[in-house]
Length: 153
View 1 (cartoon, rainbow, N blue to C red):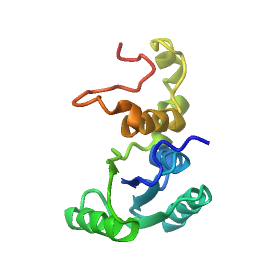
View 2 (view 1 turned 90 degrees about the horizontal axis):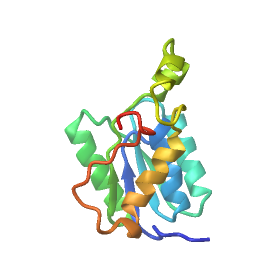
View 3 (view 1 turned 180 degrees about the horizontal axis):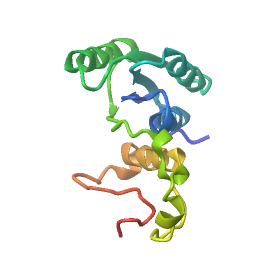
View 4 (view 1 turned 30 degrees about the vertical axis):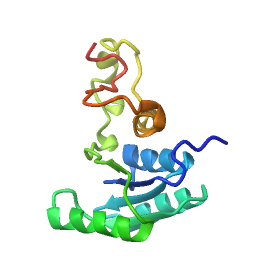
């Protein structure tokens, strides 16, 4: 199996659920050791870490809120201490997929305006992140890439 991120060390903020959890799993599948932060659901964070460890990488869950600079600094320090260094930082925006409009009142109306008439999945976002932090995107710098299925095209 190809492991393009073999022995890289990643920190994914907000990594216990949704898009960020999918990113943790994808990076682990690609060979990266991962640390993830969470705010209030340690069981979910532990499960995400356990799943990643099942892919033969190190994985740790760290309680830290992105809004708390001291907690984030501590999370980075713990990541470096426990994993040996830090190569990849995924600063998850904290988008709540539970609020996904795919289940909302206007979902069908919005689909009519989409180039691809469906909503994206956390795994599709994770695939883009894995590409951008991998060796094949080594020449990509300063780019703003939108993952929205053509909605803003």
